[in-house]
Length: 135
Image (tube, rainbow, N blue to C red; front, side, top):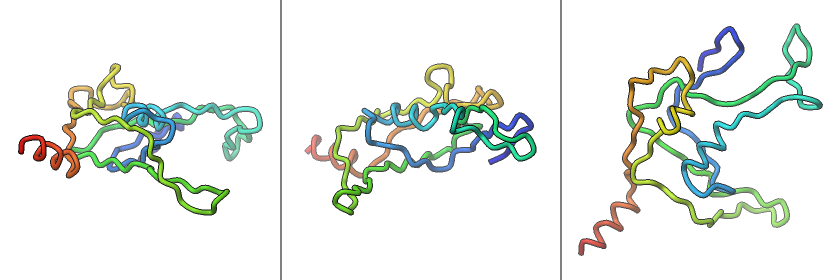
């Protein structure tokens, strides 16, 4: 991760943990991950020599790797039962994941827009299902 003079942080994506709860699918999870949070009022950003400042916090990517690994947060801690519980909501995966969608909304302005960020889903579960359907 590198820091630029404007105070923005641009990430190079290796592996992401994406929320499943409250998201219909992988695009909704990426939208939630890249969502801009406003830091204002009681939640102002503390800028060393400048004190508390209104700010915006979010994630944009410089690039994506050749092989993208996604980790889905399918468990959460339940304070009532003091246990981890599985999130069993329906969750949609496209067979092709296009991270250039909507004019590259996940990419920083410095990102190389000539690189195509289109991924094909590979999963043991998907491959097993395709084999069963062929049989």
